[in-house]
Length: 138
Length: 138
Length: 138
Length: 138
Image 1 (cartoon, each protein chain N blue to C red):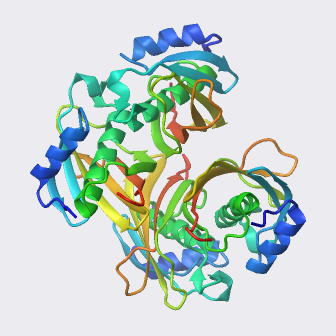
Image 2 (image 1 turned 60 degrees about the vertical axis):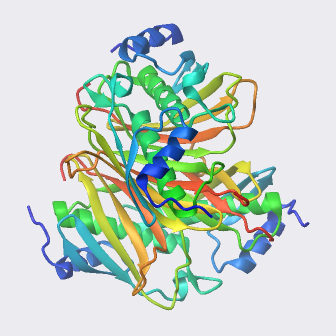
Image 3 (image 1 turned 90 degrees about the horizontal axis):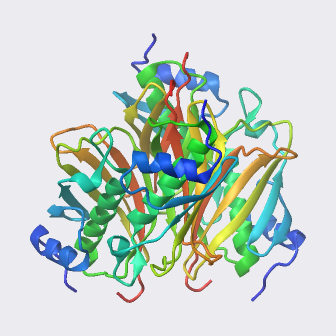
């Protein structure tokens, strides 16, 4: 089965799957993917902060990227749970970095987390835990 | 302090606050708000289903509406946690209904749930629990 | 396949399975179970309140009871996620009632909620959402 | 204000507060605490695995320890949310290690995570995210 080994190849797959995949995969490692998103006016809330749904969407795709990196193409894998704690305002003036990691890759469920930060910032904007259901015959 | 008593007035407030508030408040009761959203191509995923971030965004605004209905204007109230369980595909062909309810309205935190369904369907698309932080001097 | 139709029969099964199943099933309906727990000194925290782990344990068993009522014996079904929002102190002087409901009963996952209250109180002590994984050949 | 600097001192405080604080603090660093728990028959489920409520209770206390290490005595700080993903069976034959970390320490809320493992195992048993409310005048 195909497993992506480069962030570039995985980006091509995500671009074919989604109209707007919330940014680019910039790093792909074992059970780990990093995405970078440049926000624009569609993602901004009053106060020049990035909207919650944008952050949730980015986290969801980043975790999907980490999963695809681990198991290869899985168009029918779906999010079953996503839980996000918002901790600091996201600065819309700099890119958002999403670090996704698999905690567990089972036959039927993948569980992990996504850390969301502004580029060049250490402090977390938000922390996400999420679970994907993996179809039996993907 | 102003408390909204009509869905129409609350809609005006939300429209002034957000560019695209994910639909309209169609019912407003004590600690309870119902929103209705007609989805379009921007919210659709392959398979003619509504995207997860769209559902999360709608749930977030619906709970905010229930909170505003209870405490009046609170532009600085922010989501601190949102946890969503996705259960069935959302049919993009019919409107999405979001029923938001406050479980607890404290001085500093509001906690509640949002049930997401397709219009005229009983089965849940998704269930959300969420917490908002209420600023001390709103 | 055996499906329990009475709370009494289901209690016998839970008692055989667990040393201390956190109380008794007092009602069993379609995709719904209610448990009642009388707390004692082992469950109490300073302030005469019921401990968080006790409430989480009760919620977990109540949801398991609702699941068993729906699918029959499933000793290998396991909790995969449990998320609890604590809202008010539990009064250790009266019994705790846990109302568990299935939102979705799939082949592989069951998702639902548990409402925790003191007996004869309307206000929620805590709200739980939880997911169980159902083994393929139970 | 008193801030604990040693795991031993913090253990004394926890022992005075709780009858059975789910093990000992074995390390205390900036915004970080590690607890170790030896389980016994009270914590075991069929299959020689550690019960879910035991793991939730240990995680809750470990995060409380990390919070106390950061802010000093806060007997009235309370858990508002705890979300746990169970990933692998806990082996009751070896101690459970809980690594708790603060993501955010605000004036009113502390948010963080707890990683649960068997001693000398790398793989996670469970992952917890949790939020504590910090009283205004502690």
